[in-house]
Length: 439
Image (cartoon, rainbow, N blue to C red; front, side, top):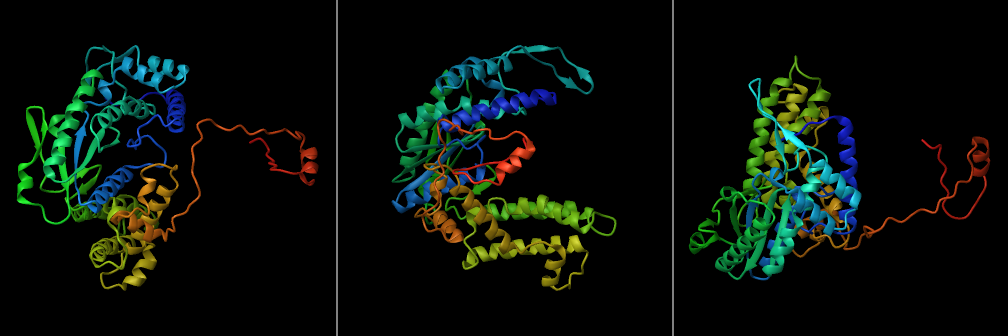
C-alpha cells in the first residue's frame, strides 16, 4: 500500500522521523547489521561487510554461507502494540511514542480500480508505505530478531536493509554452515510468530562462498526450512542489486550491470541527435541513467588499473562510455577518442571507477568508530586491501563519535544593533566568536 498525503503532514512526519532516527543513532538502539534509514549508509555497504566477513573466514581456512530472507508484506503487517512496546524499550521519548500510536490509529483504506471505488474499510495494523516516517518505524520494529537469533546461535551475523535480511555463518565445511543456517531459520520463525511477522518462503535463497572450485557434494547440502529445504545456489545470487558468485569475483554482477547499461543506452539514444536534447543535457542523462546503472557496485570489484582482470572489465565499460560520447556530440565513429572525450565532457571509465571507489572508502572512514562497515577499509582481506590501496590509507584518521547526549553551546549574545555589532567585531577577545545577521 503506497500512501500519498498532503505536504504539511509530510513535514510533521519528517520531523518525527528525524527525532526517532537521531535518538536511535546516539543510543545505538539499532542493530549493527541494520543499514537502512541511516545517514551515510547504503546497500553497497552491507554487501561490503558480507564480503569482508567472508574473506576473513577464508583466511581462517573456513567456508562461509548466507541465507537471504524476505519479510512478507513487510509494512502492512507491522503491529501497533508491538511497535509501541519496542519503542518504549529503546527509550524513545513518550511524546514520539504517542505520536506514532496516533499516526497508526483510525486509518481507513479503499480500493479504486478502473474508475470504480470499493468500500471503505478500517485498518488496524501496518505502516503506510511511502511516507517519511514509514522506513524508520519499520526499522525500529526489527532489531529484536537480530538479538534473538545471534544470542541463540553462536558465530552467526545478521545483516539487513529494510525488509531484506541476510544471515551469515561460517564453518569447516558446507554441511556445518547449512546446519547453522537451519538453526537460524528455527530461531527466526519463533521470533516471527511472537511478533506477528511472516517470512516469504518462496523468496528464500542460500549461497555458499568458498575459494576454488565447488565440490560436487555441495549440491546435496541444503538449508532446512520447516518441512522444505533451500539448496545453495549454483549460479550467482542477487541480493540488494549485487550478484554474488561463490568466489566473490563479481564477474556475473559486472556482466549483468553492463548489459543493463547497454539496454538503457539503446532506449535513450532517441533523445540525442539533431532533434534531441542539447549536448549538455545529453551528458547529464548519460551520467544519471546509464553510468549509474552500469557501474553500480563497481566499488566492490575494482582492483585498480594495475590488475589485468579488472582492466578487461574497465575496457568493456569504456566502450559503453565511447557510445555515450558519440551520442552526446553526434561525432562520427572514426573521431579520435581523445577529442571525443574532451568534447563530450564524459570522463574515462578507469577514472570514474577510481573516483567511485575512492569516494566509497572515504565515506566508510567517515562512519562512527566501531561501525563494522568502517572496519572494512584496511582489513586483511581482498576488499580491505583494495580500498586501502585506492586511498593510500595509512591506518589513522580523525575519530568520528556520536555523543549520546547533545552538548550545549554556552553562547552569549553580545550585540543586537548593527552599528554596535560592527564595532564589537573590530575588537579582540579570547575564545570562539561568531557573528550572524540572524538569517
